[in-house]
Length: 197
View 1: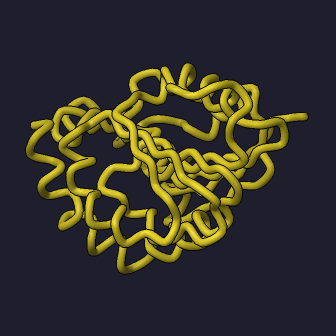
View 2 (view 1 turned 180 degrees about the horizontal axis):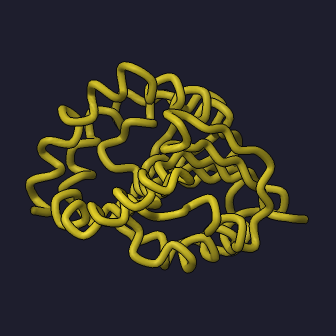
């Protein structure tokens, strides 16, 4: 299955990207400045939106996904440096990044608590962390539906947890939440946080 999802990912996501995600991604990623870390770049959907970054270091643990990003890397106006690495063990020094970007990736990270601790470690004091994620919904019926679907969904979609409460995980992390915006009735959120001084 790991080899199947990368081949269909862009085609499967296209309807959502065109209707709303594209605008959300663009607005979020254009805020990234200085040296940027992108967590789980997948097929490189964000790369064309980096306009204010000096350099992007982007990690992706799935080599089949990163193969799909080659064309987008070549077209990017910002230098993109990619690494096969996991978010729980980032190959970077402490206090390295001005901005961290993560879009539609925290649902698949096996240990999101450790990943957030690593993001905190490699971020400079006052660095911005910009996230766009789907989360467990507050509505009881929808939340229960997400819980029941998650075991099958994880097998089909490269470890994706439909029921992950990423906002609560960020809230419990060493990062400080600055703002949250909700989309699609709370199924998707943009979360801006920062590393305290």
